[in-house]
Amino acid sequence: MRSYRVLKNHLDNKDPDTMSNYGTPYHRQGKPAVLAALLLLLSGCATYKPQPLDTASPLRARVDALRLHAAPPSGEAGADYIVNPVDGLDLTEIGILAVLNNPDLTTRRAQWRVAEAQMFSAGLWPDPQVSYGLDKPTGNTSGLVNAWSLGLNYDLIPVVTRGARVEAAGRQQDQVRLDLLWQEWQVMQQARLLAVRQQLESERLTLLNRMHALYSDRYGRSARALRSGDITLDVNGTDLTALLDTLSQINQLEQTHNQTRHDLNLLLGLVPDVEIIFTPLQPPTPLAREQVDAQLQSLSERRPDLLALKAGYASQEASVRAAILAQFPSLGIGITRARDTGNVDTAGFSISLSLPLLSGNRGNIAIERATREHLREDFRARLAQAQTDVARLLTLQTILQRQIDDLQRYLPQLKTLVDRAEQAYSKGDIDALTFLNMESTWVNKRLEQIGLTQTSWENDIALTALLALPSYPRQPLLTLPEERKQAP
Image 1 (cartoon, rainbow, N blue to C red):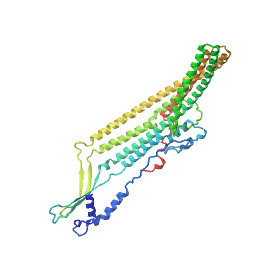
Image 2: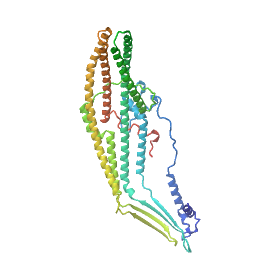
Image 3: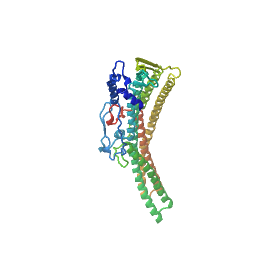
Image 4: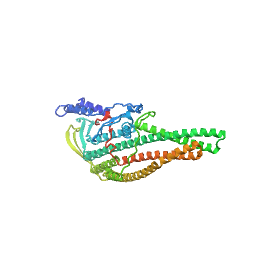
């Protein structure tokens, strides 16, 4: 605070020792320029504005209250992404709704804002440094005046490394964008999987509840027959066992179905009690091996996670180059204006140079090179994993299709036999145990068929995402919140 008062007095000409040899106060010659410089610095300062935390839940109470529309991402041709929930939601619309409204994606999009700020920061030029000093003679000061010095310095090394730093930040921004796109793909894929599960779980529950009603009725009749002595205990026990087995399956499936429904609603940004109306599922279309092989050839040029790793590697290349440039001696230049206690004014310049004898930035160079090598191997490992996953899913697709075909071939015949057995059982031509075993087998095989259909859909959805097929967008649907699209 004292140094501030001394400087203020100096600028306000309250110190008679600031008079120059020509009788003109020195500060009066430079005061307008100093004030102008101060005003310029203040005009570029950021201001603080508090942003209260929003404590309201982002979940919506109706499907039509969600964001239902998005224009094609920048650089991507095609029609707008529009969801019409009136006629039910298909898997494509479910995926779009999830991307547009998922709360977790909103958090991930904030990382894009951070990457933008980092890009903005990397492009700024380094600030010059101003120094001012004031020396007041003490003791016998006869004939002496206050000495002062004013200097302006600038470090040139940040200017030398600026290009590499800007390139690294730009590639890092690309990586964040591609990571966001890959995360959108994951959310879209998960929403489609949950939609398929919810529909097929409902179908399985309908079948089990129908069988539960039949078994419950049969057990009631056999219990009455047991009391009247018309059947034996083993027949009644068989009916009760079938009833309890079916009830156990219903109980377990109801728990799973409850979890699926709540997970999907959260993914779409809906409150838990909202009922979603779906369009009927059609059987998935198997992918031909030739098509898969063709897509694998260019997978690293299309899939966002692989592209993000490539962008991260390019960013690290620039970071290595910046570290190598920073190994050169740090060079600073400056100009000075001063007056000593003998009232002698001087002007000059200064050069500062660091000697890279001990460090020379070698530690940072080694770190950046090791990081680059790590990213290189990470990309190669991800590419190998992608090829293995695609091959595994393609083989699973063949297995599932064969199993589904087998069930479709034999299930109608089994259903015909069950219907005929039911007629024979009602006439007393076959015993209850024989009929119950046949009917139980048909129910279990029908449940197995629904399970295979679900697995086939999950396999198709995963294979489509891994191969980066055209059903997924090539740019993030919502890169930034609408109210914050301006540059930092």
